[in-house]
Length: 150
Image (cartoon, rainbow, N blue to C red):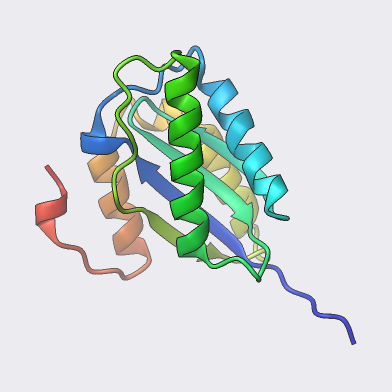
């Protein structure tokens, strides 16, 4: 018998010190790089978008790949790529942590998250990244330490 799985992750990560260094005029190139990275790891990207200080990804990761390893390597290789392109002035790396939430394919959960990620620019006219992340953590019942929120 073959193995079957559907493991959707909504991943959120930010720039080091939440610096606004992801130039939105060039963000599509960064997103394309990350999409290629996910594809190379036998994953599938459903949606990527973000703001100057953070990125949201909805993807399916291959089960042989641990989430922590994926994030470490993706942040490392994308950081090198960003610095080589010289299109993201002042970028000095990604923050150490990240948030990752598993999502359901059923009940329109996937479509709702795709739309949420797609509309980041509109969403952030009203809410800061910190407010957004606190809300996501609360929705998933995750306790957090205020010291990580400036």
